[in-house]
Image (tube, rainbow, N blue to C red; front, side, top):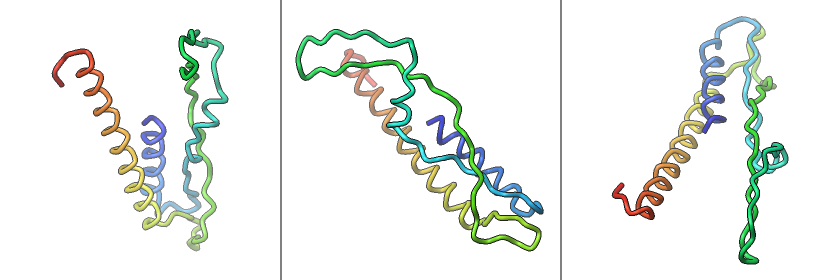
Length: 120
Protein backbone atom coordinates (compact mmCIF):
# COMPACT_ATOMS: atom_id res chain seq x y z
CA UNK A 1 0.00 0.00 0.00
CA UNK A 2 2.92 2.34 0.70
CA UNK A 3 4.30 1.63 -2.76
CA UNK A 4 0.97 2.64 -4.32
CA UNK A 5 0.83 5.81 -2.19
CA UNK A 6 4.35 6.79 -3.21
CA UNK A 7 3.61 6.04 -6.86
CA UNK A 8 0.42 8.13 -6.73
CA UNK A 9 2.49 11.10 -5.54
CA UNK A 10 4.96 10.74 -8.39
CA UNK A 11 2.20 10.37 -10.96
CA UNK A 12 0.50 13.50 -9.59
CA UNK A 13 3.80 15.39 -9.98
CA UNK A 14 4.01 14.21 -13.59
CA UNK A 15 0.48 15.46 -14.32
CA UNK A 16 1.13 18.77 -12.54
CA UNK A 17 4.32 19.35 -14.55
CA UNK A 18 2.93 18.22 -17.91
CA UNK A 19 3.46 21.71 -19.37
CA UNK A 20 6.80 22.45 -17.67
CA UNK A 21 9.60 22.78 -20.27
CA UNK A 22 12.31 20.15 -19.88
CA UNK A 23 10.43 18.14 -17.24
CA UNK A 24 10.93 14.37 -17.51
CA UNK A 25 8.29 12.18 -15.90
CA UNK A 26 9.16 9.78 -13.09
CA UNK A 27 7.70 6.49 -11.98
CA UNK A 28 8.54 3.76 -9.49
CA UNK A 29 10.09 0.47 -10.46
CA UNK A 30 7.50 -2.31 -10.30
CA UNK A 31 7.10 -3.80 -6.83
CA UNK A 32 8.89 -7.12 -6.49
CA UNK A 33 8.07 -9.48 -3.63
CA UNK A 34 11.14 -11.60 -4.30
CA UNK A 35 13.35 -8.51 -4.05
CA UNK A 36 11.76 -7.55 -0.70
CA UNK A 37 12.18 -11.07 0.65
CA UNK A 38 15.89 -10.79 -0.08
CA UNK A 39 16.11 -7.74 2.19
CA UNK A 40 15.59 -9.55 5.47
CA UNK A 41 16.63 -7.51 8.49
CA UNK A 42 18.79 -8.78 11.33
CA UNK A 43 15.70 -8.86 13.58
CA UNK A 44 14.52 -12.30 12.47
CA UNK A 45 11.61 -13.87 14.23
CA UNK A 46 12.28 -17.31 15.57
CA UNK A 47 9.61 -19.89 14.92
CA UNK A 48 9.28 -23.45 15.96
CA UNK A 49 8.13 -26.04 13.48
CA UNK A 50 5.60 -28.34 15.08
CA UNK A 51 4.45 -29.88 11.81
CA UNK A 52 6.41 -30.48 8.61
CA UNK A 53 3.95 -28.38 6.58
CA UNK A 54 4.50 -25.24 8.69
CA UNK A 55 6.60 -22.43 7.27
CA UNK A 56 9.13 -20.19 8.96
CA UNK A 57 8.42 -16.47 9.21
CA UNK A 58 10.98 -13.71 9.30
CA UNK A 59 10.67 -9.94 9.65
CA UNK A 60 11.72 -7.88 6.63
CA UNK A 61 12.80 -4.28 6.62
CA UNK A 62 10.74 -1.81 4.65
CA UNK A 63 12.98 0.58 2.77
CA UNK A 64 12.10 3.62 0.70
CA UNK A 65 11.07 3.26 -2.90
CA UNK A 66 13.36 4.57 -5.62
CA UNK A 67 11.90 6.70 -8.37
CA UNK A 68 13.21 6.29 -11.87
CA UNK A 69 13.07 8.55 -14.91
CA UNK A 70 10.72 7.55 -17.68
CA UNK A 71 11.92 7.16 -21.23
CA UNK A 72 9.09 8.73 -23.18
CA UNK A 73 8.50 8.21 -26.87
CA UNK A 74 6.69 11.55 -27.10
CA UNK A 75 8.81 14.60 -26.40
CA UNK A 76 7.45 18.09 -27.01
CA UNK A 77 9.61 20.81 -28.60
CA UNK A 78 10.19 22.21 -25.07
CA UNK A 79 11.73 18.86 -24.06
CA UNK A 80 8.83 17.71 -21.88
CA UNK A 81 8.28 13.96 -22.03
CA UNK A 82 4.99 13.66 -20.12
CA UNK A 83 1.89 12.39 -21.92
CA UNK A 84 -1.26 13.25 -19.97
CA UNK A 85 -3.14 10.29 -21.43
CA UNK A 86 -0.47 7.83 -20.32
CA UNK A 87 -0.21 9.40 -16.87
CA UNK A 88 -3.97 9.33 -16.31
CA UNK A 89 -4.06 5.66 -17.34
CA UNK A 90 -1.31 4.93 -14.79
CA UNK A 91 -3.16 6.93 -12.10
CA UNK A 92 -6.36 4.96 -12.72
CA UNK A 93 -4.53 1.62 -12.72
CA UNK A 94 -2.69 2.54 -9.52
CA UNK A 95 -5.96 3.59 -7.86
CA UNK A 96 -7.64 0.31 -8.76
CA UNK A 97 -4.70 -1.72 -7.42
CA UNK A 98 -4.70 0.32 -4.19
CA UNK A 99 -8.45 -0.19 -3.73
CA UNK A 100 -8.03 -3.94 -4.26
CA UNK A 101 -5.28 -4.08 -1.62
CA UNK A 102 -7.41 -2.04 0.78
CA UNK A 103 -10.39 -4.32 0.24
CA UNK A 104 -8.29 -7.43 0.90
CA UNK A 105 -6.89 -5.83 4.07
CA UNK A 106 -10.38 -4.95 5.35
CA UNK A 107 -11.64 -8.48 4.67
CA UNK A 108 -8.69 -10.04 6.46
CA UNK A 109 -9.35 -7.83 9.51
CA UNK A 110 -13.01 -8.95 9.49
CA UNK A 111 -11.92 -12.59 9.32
CA UNK A 112 -9.58 -12.11 12.28
CA UNK A 113 -12.34 -10.39 14.29
CA UNK A 114 -14.72 -13.26 13.56
CA UNK A 115 -12.05 -15.77 14.55
CA UNK A 116 -11.63 -13.95 17.87
CA UNK A 117 -15.38 -14.04 18.45
CA UNK A 118 -15.99 -10.34 17.87
CA UNK A 119 -18.56 -9.08 15.43
CA UNK A 120 -17.12 -7.13 12.47
